[in-house]
Length: 87
Ligand SMILES: [Zn+2]
Image (cartoon, rainbow, N blue to C red; front, side, top):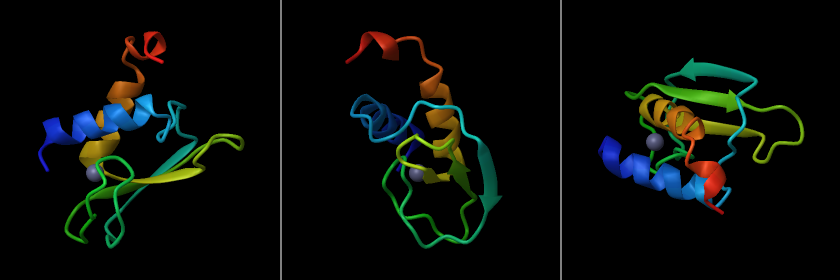
């Protein structure tokens, strides 16, 4: 999946509130792989850098696993000013 495709999926998930728009409390990089990315939905392989992201209590979901690229896209999209206008 290329970055543009990932961006469109992440944007859609933000719009559907499947991804939080809260600032992460903690993020930790890792190379374990083996699960699905909460951003683009593709499998994270052990060759790909990924991040475990945690949120404050009360935020749903409580944590995300993301490719490094998807983390960057998600953070960028969260800051995008167009989201408050979209419902
Ligand atoms: Zn991803």
